[in-house]
Image 1 (tube, rainbow, N blue to C red):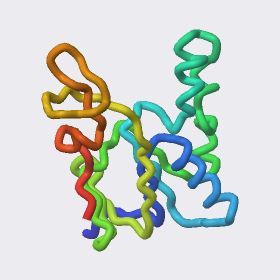
Image 2: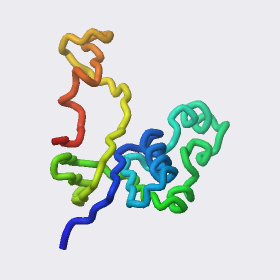
Image 3: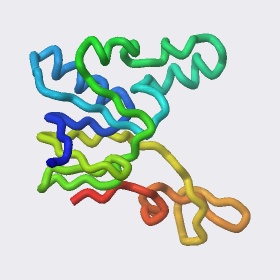
Image 4: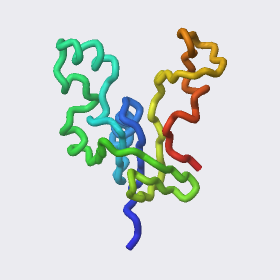
Length: 149
């Protein structure tokens, strides 16, 4: 039995993947589309989350890029709480958790953000009493990122 596969694999839980899925459907793409994210929810807008929802001024659905029913209506599968552990662009395979998945094309759009880590190495981004805060680039070894080959 062969591994499952999708035509388009969208990796990330933000506006880039949600917009890519919408554009594919608007342009008439009829193949399978899968959004995979480690987030607990379908793709959502980050600013409204902190500026509205967490302050009690907006409800949860207001933060979503598309209403939950949009994905089913447009035949876009969303897998939340699913890490991509490996991505082989030559073989066109991914490992979602422990499950292998083939794909035709993939978009890696996991975004970026500051996830400061403490380092005693000479980092030029500021300091605390005994250690300096490092940028994600200078702490690359502490990040758990998928293997991309």
